[in-house]
Length: 251
Image 1: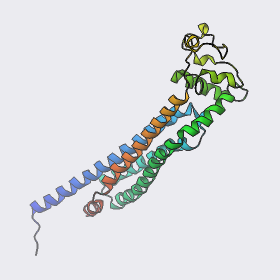
Image 2 (image 1 turned 120 degrees about the vertical axis):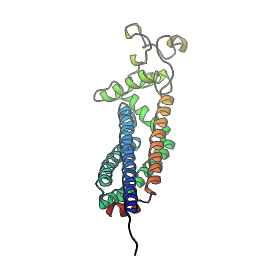
Image 3 (image 1 turned 90 degrees about the horizontal axis):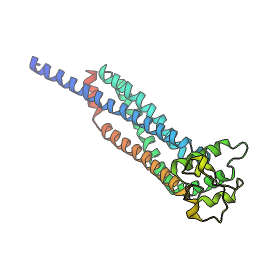
Image 4 (image 1 turned 90 degrees about the vertical axis):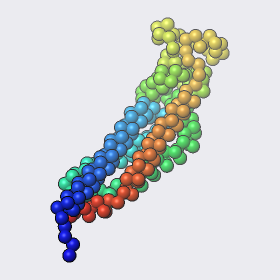
């Protein structure tokens, strides 16, 4: 007959306590990763919203939204996982592990989708930006006008390829958002054949397409990298023998 001494009992109890707090720590890491995905998705979404009139509400936009949704789910699961570990609830802990496996698959898919989109960025931007220029300062297209003005001020650019693009659309003149000097001193409504060096004295002459393309590609890289990174970290934690911990917790 195996006798259980007080020392053995204390060792078993100590082991259970260690495993309980390890599970709590792992679940807390998952909760933090969920909050991180929400923050990254929100930042990209807010930054992107200024240019929604160029890029449309599909493709690239879906990635930040997906990360915010997944982040919320992970944060909730992490919270319940922490509760399950502290309260020593085996069923709650195992449910957390299974659902987190599903989240891992969604995150990995979102990260891959973000990188795949990089190949279509230039074509997508070219079409959207040209369409936006045609509708600049037109009735019912106030959002396009605001988006173009915000783009040209932030990226210090003018037009799609250069400032002369504005002479070939309905507006027929260079907007004041191209100016790099005070608006009251800026007179951008010159003719297309004006000397570029002369125009550069008061407006930005370089186009916006390259800067916008780089910005979108960089943000797609951030989103994809974060998603894949979080998924890898979570996979590593999921490989921890949770079942063994569950047996201890259920004891």
